[in-house]
Amino acid sequence: MIDTVTKTISWTPWSGPGMEKLRFRRGHPGDAPYVASAVVLGTADGRPYRLNYKLKLESNWQVRKAVFEISTVDGIATRMLRTDGIGHWRDDTGALLNELNGCLDVDIEATPFTAMLPIRRLKQAAGQQNDISVIYVEVPALAFAAVRQRYSCVEPLKVGIAGGRYVKEGPIGEFKAELAVDLDGVVIDYPPLFRRVYPV
Image (cartoon, rainbow, N blue to C red):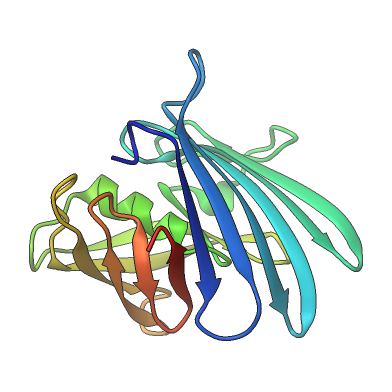
């Protein structure tokens, strides 16, 4: 299972160039329970970028800390988010980001990985639907915005036994996709955006 061993996972876009390689591991003693670090190579408006991100995760699959570094032809930029776990966020200067109050999840535009986090956290039964507030991270701008998303369970995940299917909407009324996930809740297919290429 993903939460007990180190794993490497890769996705590509459904169309166009790009690749993500993610490493998921248990945290070291004194660190967060789980750590995910990744490199994403992609394009936006025909311009290439490289995104490095690291997420430190609690045992309930909430993000504790998120660090981003983006490289484009215009240079390198970094940003950081840190939370108290109850919906209050600070940036790398320690300033409170009041516009993000109430968000428990982080959704990074350039990766399907972050869809796993609410799926594992919510533990939905078949037919269950939850509206949640998430921090949407726009790439390559590294702009943060609070948005409302909806997760609906079509076929529930049975952790360690069988994968599942979920419908993700967000912003609600603007985007909708059905996600296939493996027995860990990691996205396999996310049409029309991403597909997993390793492990297959």
